[in-house]
Image (cartoon, rainbow, N blue to C red; front, top):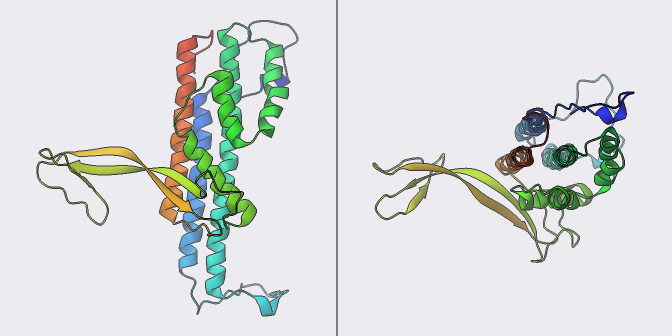
Length: 279
């Protein structure tokens, strides 16, 4: 979304804005997808490192400032994976923060347009002091503000909060859970959603979740798809250790959250009927 408030016209007149929600969502999705792609390569590369693999580069001159404290290839592989997971969560939540800030601006514009109070001065407030205050807020407060200030209701906010909590632990405590990370239950919880395929017995109603290892379905059993909640629980002093699949589902959950938020903004446009285009 462009920022016309930074360069208002010299004469007042009707304000025409193109708020492209599809582009906003697409940019967020691309950032998350690139993180998954890079993480897949780094984790796969680490798998080929074993105790017999040399870590020397092809440089003419290799420098080892702490030669007697170098990591073994296997230890370096483990640390590299942890480093990439840490950065993946950090970058994912930075992308989410930027996405939320853009969504807040859109929500504010929709609200002002619906009340016929969208002026150049109001746009400057939305993109100026209000944007700065929202930027300074932490992620849980950013989520709450969207609902409280603009009435934007969306799914998966709880999941996003847990992902952000895990990000904080990974970045600030290198993934070792501290007392700062735990919730009311005394643990750190990561929640995500998975797309689950299951078959149902038409007679008894019992279900069978289909997996890669066991995807056989009894004759006559209909097959359905649903989102199912999954979680990992970490105790104090425990190290966060996640598989690629768990991280993939976590970032996919962020994508689902983004889609839900953009849909909520679309519904606000439809409900308020502001004098602006369908986007």
